[in-house]
Image 1 (spheres, helix red, strand yellow):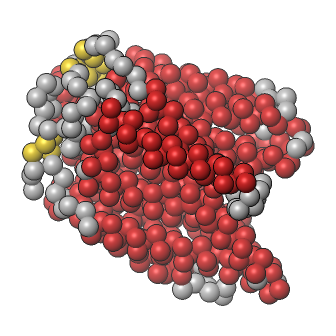
Image 2 (tube, rainbow, N blue to C red):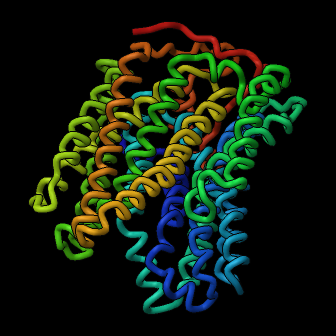
Image 3 (tube, rainbow, N blue to C red):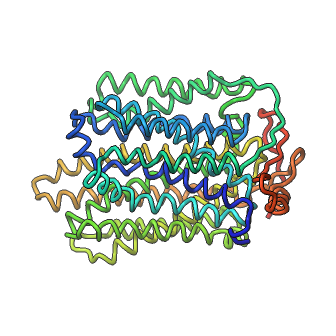
Length: 507
């Protein structure tokens, strides 16, 4: 079914727009840093402007996923948009580096609510057959943003002011808020809830301290310093305490069934390795293309842009494949494309022709499109409305967690290799350090293949007992599409969140 005349289209536009805000603000500030430092000073703290956004977003995603199951997707998404816009306005008005860092943290907290609920809402209002195409649209947001955001940030900084990087979010965010408020209507059967505050705190401590240690270790302080020891000890202690707390919680933030299910665990590991792969290529390929291959900045950006093109394209087409051969096997095929890409990248020399990285990076985009979308759609199809937010939040958390780990781990590898090869000159030192990153990408691809080979082939379909299947909801949406104020409705009756989803094994 086309988008024109579909009652869900205004909601989809809002989802794409809000996702774009989050994706753009991940990288848009990079090219404006000289102007930011010129205004605010404190160059030594610039890294925190990026790190705090990623940290705040990553550690709060699973909490929002659970809250959307308890209170509905709409209020969580609207809350996230408001908080993100408050953070944007505060960032634009920042009078010093500390104020900008705090404001970016607020942005990250709002961005987490958006990232967690956008994919969940897409899973709620579209059928399994439609979700591949819809996930393709959402994936394209990240791809396009990775290419145009740095350029847009540079334009604002050069011709206006870097503060417009944040101010432009406000009218776009308000428009998205209106579309969601008017277009998406949820009818949720309310019941008394007991928020799992202890679980939420432990999630924040475990993930936050671990990511903080990775981001700052080896740069702000040595890896073997007391600071690293304390931070990683807190992370380990919180992670060890979390399962016991969640087993006793009435409505746990991360229910035990999420940990026990092999498909979910394998998909989470795959999301982590894929997230590491994406961040490794996104950070190091453009610089390698410019310094080693001698490409112009635009040409070097195009090398990475091939992944941004092939990823959403294959994601959109993945439904045709996973409906024929299954979700796991489709993701496995994607992992083989990623493996071929990793092998190709690891063979690149300092004299490589430009077509080689273009092809290999493009293959990685094919792999990512065939990995992320089938696993997301397949797992969403195994649970009902009451668990879908928790599950989607867990997968998004794994992806962002992988990016955080990848940024820190690959950064440490690159810095070490640069130091070891400094005697060979700038070009060869940079090539050798980037080659080490490419080998790391290859290792991630091998792990992804191994994990998917050990994942059950069949994803069980959820047997809906208390709410009508999503396909029936979609039919009702279409029947109501000519009703001016009906919008997109979701009828939900909540049950116990402690119970694992009831499923039926299907081919």
